Length: 109
Image 1: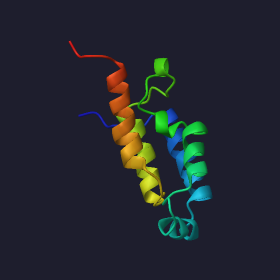
Image 2: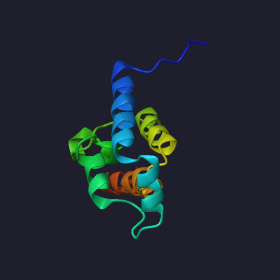
Image 3: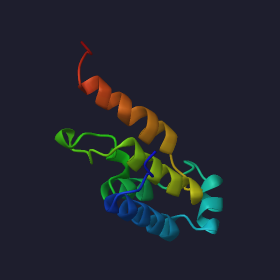
């Protein structure tokens, strides 16, 4: 069985998300966000989507997304989870975005 290896682009994605998390989700920030309403910083969340494209990883390039793979999504979610990043990761990145992409593709034949 061949050994799995991340691509250079995936390594760059991991490094970029890790750096973003280190800059925006320090322990004190996370503790403060956990007790705020909403429980995430909408401006930081928007930057995660616009600067890194994390929110559009599962969206095809033809629809304005990154055209990423499930592995790309897993890398981003792993780094966000490791940093205890506050935000609607599961509902947005793993549920809503793929559902919208599937809906825009039309019925399956």
